[in-house]
Image (tube, rainbow, N blue to C red; front, side, top):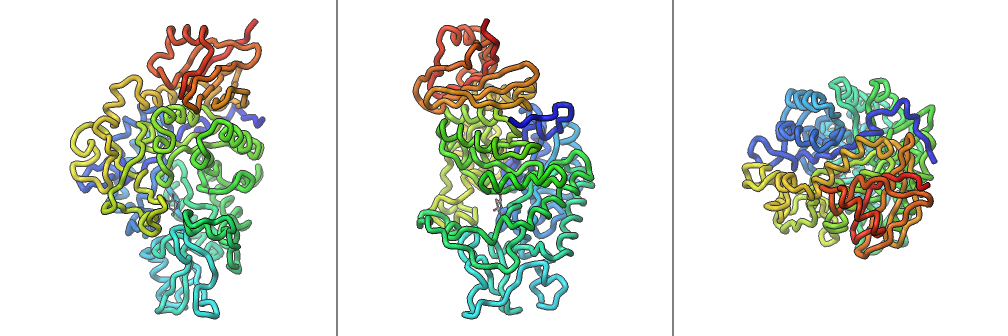
Length: 544
Ligand code: NOJ
């Protein structure tokens, strides 16, 4: 089992990260879209929730073809969200509450409206031509290779005026940057410095494993397992278009820069199997990102045995100095409550906040926003629009935060850019704040528990035997031993305790969050079962 040097635990190891999708958090200027002033007005909520850092999805000037992941200026703020002065105010306000702020850095591609690309496409002789990936057509006049965009269709777009194709892993309006060009690397490092100098606490780095492509751009191999119900991208194995050996040097350079600023953190968005994911930590001497995002809880079926195995495999894959992390929702993934239902969303909360490693919590998951039906005329996500019928649309997870029961749920005074969750009149922050047994109250109590028990924040983890449908693990630190038992099924199951232990205290329960109480404790001691959908955090003591 990997051990932590407890004398020097950086904030991001103990901390919990909260992802804000700025368009949908809080509108302050009545345009139906969230903004920085809106976020600032909700900082007391975030502080009271008990999270440690906020990660903002992109807020830079953008034509919004991919809602901000198409950046036209890395060093500005889109007027829709505010301006740099407003950003500085937000950052100060975040810091004043003892919280940290992470930005989203998107180095793989820009918008086609970025001045770099406008210059690059202006002529073959332009000094910025090589800042992007331009190629002549294949001999038949078609695209230079068979690569498929993540949003469907060829990864190549023809530019008639200069007679070449350019590469785009996402939309045609998101041209890929050429990271083999030294000048572009320098320009990107300057971008990072711009924000680090302003005081941001780190970055989530978008599609980091895409950043550089095989030099000769060979065809990707065909994926024999592809079926038409899957995204077009998966027709090929992204062997040459992603996860190239040269990418690790770039990742290490990002880290060296971040480290030169002290206590900053880099999180890499990287979707790879464990063995390849682990390489993004780098080595002890030449570290890369602090945390390559671990999406296993998003990708896994909701099954105790499967999740147990993935925890074991993930832990085993980490380099000795590698700190784990867990993600259960995002602006791309389906909502956790939509996947597992209301009862299990409570179990999921307990899982996320009791595993070893930094948790990332996505806005709205703390009140259990579930399935949201987006009427066809309100679909906005380009991924959903370009490949309809496959359930790929991401609007379902980007609906506005419902804050209270007032018009438009207190998000805006105008009809929001995406519809609210249908059940917003009852499923909103204010309503759940009033209810001591709500999911929000459970999140608050689990976040507080994590803060007050180092065993949860930084303790070691041991998976322990459990009944069918039950996932159980111990967290231990400095003489404290906690047992987490999670019933991922709908049947009553035996509660098995490790040998020679008994329950000293029930610290949290998914079923009775307001009463990890005396009566509950007494109940537990006579009745060693887990109710359906029940999760418990128990303090153990040795049985003499
Ligand atoms: C990953 C982001 O999370 C997603 O929202 C975006 O569409 C792609 N990267 C392209 O930037």
